[in-house]
Image 1 (cartoon, rainbow, N blue to C red):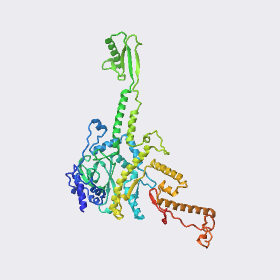
Image 2: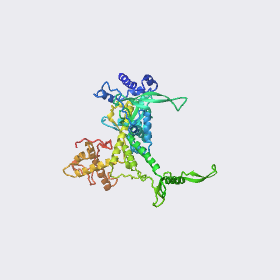
Image 3: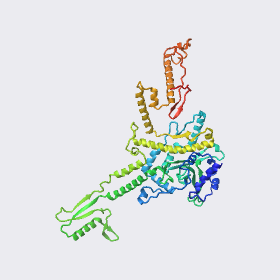
Length: 576
């Protein structure tokens, strides 16, 4: 109880040190606004805090001093480079505007489509239990059932695309755990997605490495004006009350998280400026101009200039009838080419000529624009051939390096999301008492999303094919053991090699039985003669004769196939 009070006091102390929370009475807040805070408080994981207390670096008296900020000066820098607002609402609004840009939206859709992959069992994410040799089959089934129940709350097959898109745009995703106050042992009963612009994590130290809890700004609307927010209630949330997923990217002074699309901010700004410049240039330079070379004979320069003005006035106007002026008048003609050029020519020339000047010669050249488009896609880590509508999809043996990098990037995104889901699942197990019952540790539980299937698995098959080729070429050498080749070049463990031997025996038994059926028909067992009397060494082993006995059943061994351990009938251990 003393440790719980100390932990709660440390969390509130951090809140009091951060504006604008000094005036809050947290005892009343806990009792009125978040009565379930204490139910989550005593189920936390203290490993991170314990490591920090025993660390030479983290354990000091000045570790709670606020960090400084880095300012950027210059209008262009503010527009193109940093310009990261300290206000979270304004910052997220800018990122959402960026995400609506067509090129960025297409790239985000491509990323989110690869993050959600449904396997043959209908699962998006799977549970793997590691280093738990004492866990029996019944307990493993229980843990898998609880995991399926917990993961169904998130509806990843239908809403996973939305969650990953929010993570890419806003950099954070928050889920509130819903429990029943009177039935805490039932664990988490559901999850609610919280708006990321109304909740912030509260850290324990200057490095912002240890999350102590969260502060939620709950809007209270004006009863007289429902569209207006009267105030905000600041509600502290325990660390285990929230499933928190972040991008893993910090800002320059490490005070808040940045989304993935921050990498494309500069390219996005430059691309939008270049597009506007090209449009303006096309509008200005698109019209074709006329150049009039007027023969003025031997007129003096003043008379020649007056003669040109007279021609220009007549060219820019046309005769029309105006009732207000009671007759024909010269009216301005807006359809005339106002950008035409007029030049006087002296006597001896070929006379008056009109020459047509072409419009902008490079209006169809978009090399500069495509440079910034490619730069934007590169910042978003999406291969260019995926976003080019003219490129054809190919699943051949050749894979571009960009595709491999993109698949690894998708796996990193999935690992970030799986880490947040894992913490929530451990909280669910602790609420139900399963965590302590089976002595589960955080390292025993591993969550893994299905990897991108288009190119990642193809690359894995290519690696397996290379291993198999090397093994076949070396195992055919009489001086190299096949068993040693399986361990050295295929990477098999002793368990895999034993299992392979047992399954070879079972395959031989099956082939032998097929040969008996072919020779004696489906009732070959009843047609067998009585077992001959004699010493065991004199009995016919029946490898082809009719007087053979049924071989004893062969047992397979355990093997690791597709990340799961498959076991057959137990066999007597024997050294390889």
